[in-house]
Image (cartoon, rainbow, N blue to C red; front, side, top):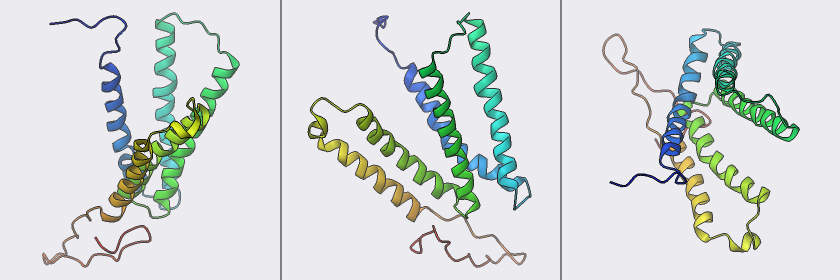
Amino acid sequence: MTTPQPNQPGLAWLAYALLTVFSWGVYGIFLHTGQLAMKDPVNGRYKAFLLVGVAYFLTAVLAPLGMLIVKGATWSFPAKGLWWSLIAGVVGAVGAFGVLLAFGAKGTPAVVMSIVFAGAPVVNALYSIMAHPPEGGWAVVKWQFYLGIALAAAGGCLVTFYKPNPPAPKMASGVKAPSAPPGPIESKNQ
């Protein structure tokens, strides 16, 4: 059995990435459930988002603050790192708020999150290449990259248009109630 060398990354990064996949995978469903459970059709989404902010404070302020104290970190925050980190936080919060607004506009978690998670990697890849162009420019970008973008977009569309519908609610007599017609984002071919 070989032991990993100190300069080899190991698989911890994969475990953390999968933690994020799971967390963000259930985020939309949990947020929508919280919004509906507020029992306030006008302001429920804002109440839910307020509590998301409280959770961010607990998770993204107190936890790293504790880690910095435990690890004896310096309290120097270079301006560039400070501003880019704040911008990242604003962009993340705007995205989370956009999810809630999409739910408020009658988007369902399955559809909204499919679009978000199919589109976000495409935006990430394109922005990364624009911000840090490869040596040789776009001409050296392999065809597999473009295929990946097309597949991500196609996958988001397919999941959005052909997601399975939940079972129709049963009426008191045991007969299924007629299902509602598809909404503006729902597909008629389901």
